[in-house]
Amino acid sequence: MTQPPHDEPTAAGPEELREQVEQTRQKLGETVNALAAKTDVKAGAKEKAADVKRQAGAKAEELKTKAADAASQVQDKLPEPVREKAVQGARGARENRTALLVAVGIAMLWLARRRGKGWNER
Image (tube, rainbow, N blue to C red; front, side, top):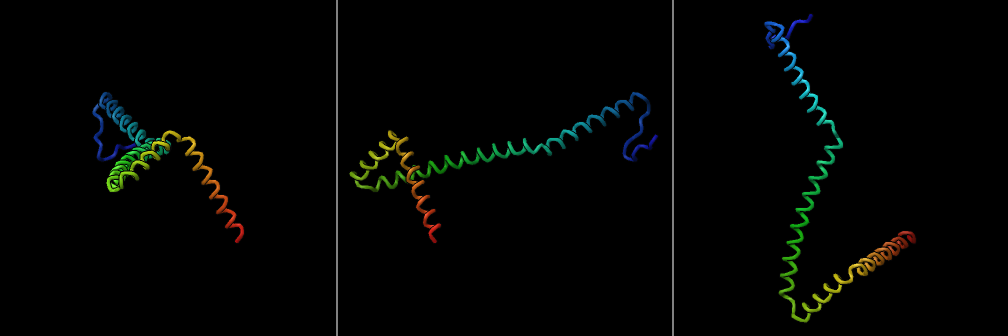
C-alpha cells in the first residue's frame, strides 16, 4: 500500500476509512463537474450569446428613447405645415410598410449594381 500524504490524517478504523473514501469521492466528483462545466464550449457560447442579446436589447431601447427625444425636439422647432407633412409621411409609411420595404430593397439593389459597374469599368 502507499503512504497517505502528510497533510491527511490516517484512518483509525475501517468505518473512518470508508468516510474518508466517500469524502474524497465527493470532492473528486465536484472537481470533475467543475472541469466539465469549464470545457463545455457550447453552453458557454449560448450563455455569451444570451448576454450579448440582452445587452443589445437594452442598448436598442436606450437608442430608441434617445431618437424619440431628438425627434420630439426637432419636431417642436418645425413650422406647423412641415410637422403635418411629416406626420402624414410617417402614417403613410406605417400603412404601406411592405411597399416601402420593397421600394427600399429595389433601391439598394440598384445602387449595388450601379456601384458594381463603376468598379468593373475602372
